[in-house]
Length: 403
Image (cartoon, rainbow, N blue to C red; front, side, top):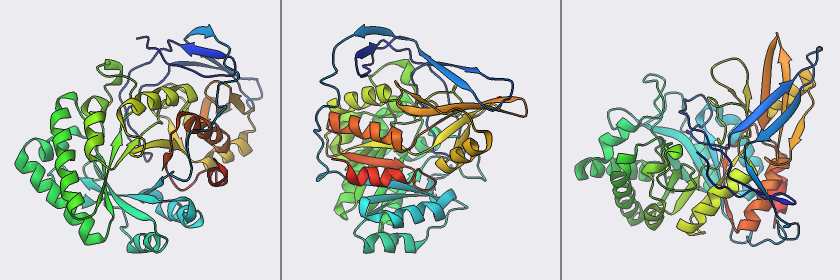
């Protein structure tokens, strides 16, 4: 289905990019089904298997416009009002916490990925999570607020992907919502958290009304105790488009923004582990999502998601999630030609190993700089980084020096 999506380049406006539809599954990277620009990525590999040339073609209608003097020419975001959040995942907590400590002055909030909604409706710690109180106490000593993330992603003993049915169990009636809200408020109060980060993903369209009621009632309960409510949002650029049946149909952005204090927009996973190779968060795609969000969400509540990772696709059913350090190791080992895509505004490369073709797209300081230009141009101040640990550490200097 063709949808209009503005793409700013130095001299072109690209519209009418094709979106694709797919489902997703979960690995150790925070994943949500997201529909992205459809890229055709072709590898041309020499016989020595050491380099790959990437050719990126985008299905689009192109309308030439002279916008050289308009694109990113001014900065409307003010870093004096900017709020920054970073996620700390339990599966890489040591490196994530180390990154936070090294760059603590850049953060206003952290969200710890420690808790889940189990299939019986209870809220528990993930089996392998360490709900380390020293993380909370250190953050508080530096005047950084700590949110407890609660997800509907099953634990190791339950297995499976983001589960909408367990969310039904706790939001489908007034009584069930009340019990779940008591559990969440108790968690926030008992562990000294500053708030709750609801990360209920891949919900169905028919859950929209109940989910809104849940967020409304939870906000009242948390606010009574001086606690913050943050909600993770799936990306979309319109309503009612089946291409965005990724969980976003259950999220009424305008209504949610009346009650939640923070809305974390997942402007990443444009291409994901089950999709063909492509950018994690291209500039035109991110721009389209944020432009739509700005129509519905107050600026002080909107947080733009910033990816700090990559994916490696090969002949396996799923791509492999990669940290920036993983990417650098591959570059060092296989010495591919790394290409900067001028439209996506991110790096990618290809290589061959054991007769198998691999394609890698990743986020780094260069792509983050372009995103910061976009955020400033659009007047987006607040940022949420997925995730801390294993990132290109240069991004923190870029953040500190950004207008």
